[in-house]
Image (cartoon, rainbow, N blue to C red; front, side, top):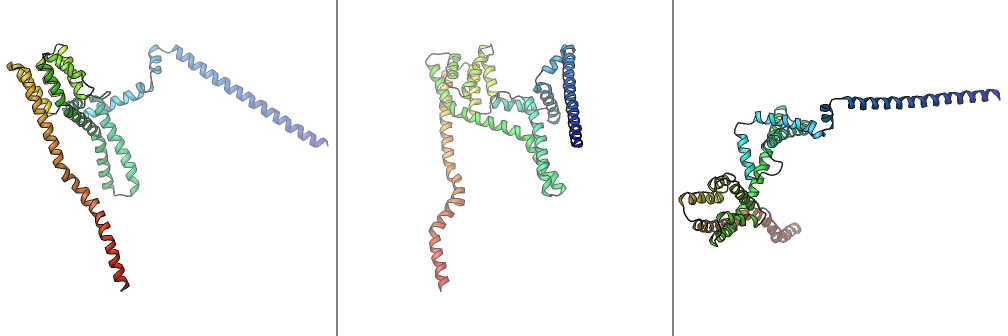
Length: 311
């Protein structure tokens, strides 16, 4: 009886010692962790103010912004000298969307090239293609990522100019009526700018703002023509510049321009109507006619097959 009791006592003593050591270790590790935290806080308090401000800055400003700056610098070295000017022209056509500028477009071009190249290589490397084919397709995918920001910017500009082209005749009518009613050109432009929320109203609002800031009417109209690629709006700006230079009454010029805008819009509608038969030919031949042939000739074909099969 004494031996089991002694054995049980030895086990309990060993467990007690192990528990005591573990508790001491936990307390020691906690004390060490607390000591390290206190030391870090003291070091942070004694650090210079510049270092404190740098640590308190957001992650985007400390890491992402410098990385974006490097991408912008790399993009400027890769493109030609006039690329920045062309991108700015496209941004003007697109209405200078918020958070879009030349530097960001250049950075996105480099980022798109790198990301698409990496993703294309990872996707194609497991397909067992030859090395030259893998290299060629990867380069093409990277080039697509490089030009993707330009495609998106061009698409945004085309959508904006489509809205402006549709709203231009009505704006010209309102401008003509306002001038003929006795308003000055600036007041008529202000009425057009306040008559809606579209991109054309924004352009007239910018024109009015430039004239109110002291820019001459001729310079403001020329700047408006440079911010767009619409032939109708550029023609209107050129006519207004010429009328102001030659002293021609503005009301007469606006009446002629309004009539031309209406005529051009009717011609565009007629052109689109004439394109409908050509565009509907492809779905008609590929989808509609085969279905009609199946419905009409299908039962006859089944009967002919059954007749020849029974004979």
